[in-house]
Image (cartoon, rainbow, N blue to C red; front, side, top):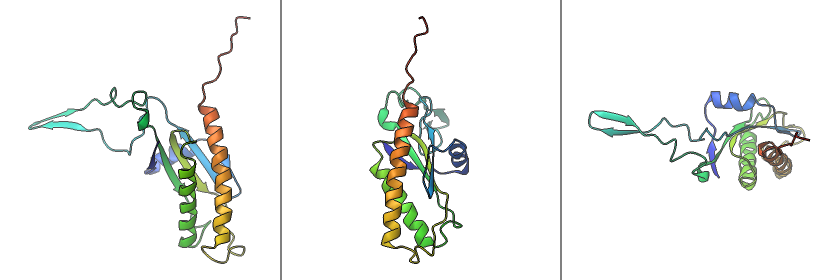
Length: 169
């Protein structure tokens, strides 16, 4: 699976409009599943084959569809680490780095689609006076591991086809 940054306010809004799939003391995870008709790309415009004086759109819907090329399934990741919750830039960078590392560790378990991980509670400056302490890094690592494991499990369960119930009885 390919990991792509989630860019653009509209993509963040659509992913965050979905009910959170997992929560922890400091974080919240939103997941917008990829549909079979939607190919998650880096958000580039459609390609065109250009000949002198002629521009013809290239139809990639059949040859590059998600069903025909499962390697094209991608996971787009967006991070929201507001300044009001982590005042120091070093702390915000630490939080983002821990989230990205956690996503890379769980990449095989996560379902394709748009994922937004949001810091929802402030990092206590009294408990962690150093902007980048080993204690804070260990706390974030442990919390993110549990959070992403839970989110991956719930996303897989939601993406699994529901069993067909025979109502002929």
